[in-house]
Amino acid sequence: MLKQSLKYRQQKGFTLVGWLIVIAIFLYFAYLAMILTPVIVGNHTMDRILESLKEEPGITQKSKRQIWRLIENRMLINQVRSVTKDDFEIVKEPNKVVVYLDYEDRVHFAANIYIVFEREKSVELVRN
Image (cartoon, rainbow, N blue to C red):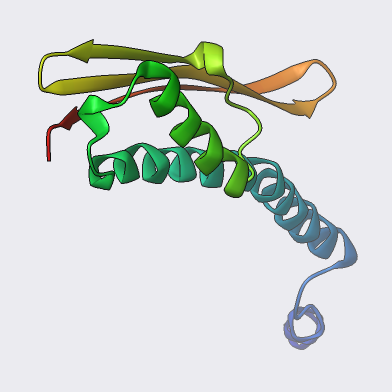
């Protein structure tokens, strides 16, 4: 009985294999955070860009080309490179403009595995 209790007292803490498993799990989640953070930040930036159009004076009087230039300039300033002109649709109606954004981001995860983010957003711009 005494030998058995001494044996359990000596087995305190993690073993080397235990530490390696913990480090592997930590590195896995750190890798996920590193590859997914830019996409999440880019999505948030595109939300801000589209919402900022609501504050643009006289936005409903501007042509589709002028509205696209406003979006393009904001994307350039915020370094958004994953969205192109083809991902936007600008619909002009009397007294309002609707801007639709529909795109997909693919993030390489490992080997031939990709994480796909599909994004759809629209913003209605009314005469201000």
